[in-house]
Image (cartoon, rainbow, N blue to C red):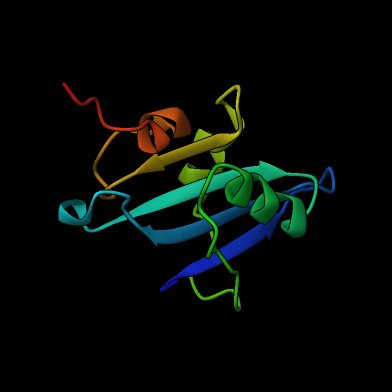
Length: 101
């Protein structure tokens, strides 16, 4: 993965931010935020959703304060967006399979 990082919160939990390729190739990359008890659990949450090849190597792009606020206020603790100006979406909207007729 290209960029990612984490931020440890005062309560002991972490927010992990990763830039991953979009599931549909034409979309480019998306920024995914995960709130979890620790970094390993955050990555496990993503892997359980089907994003198998996610790794956090270093802390080159930690979550910004706005990103931390967004993920903490979402009930699932998992959000994503395509570009910095876009709205945050629940992870279900990214993982949802395409409808075929």
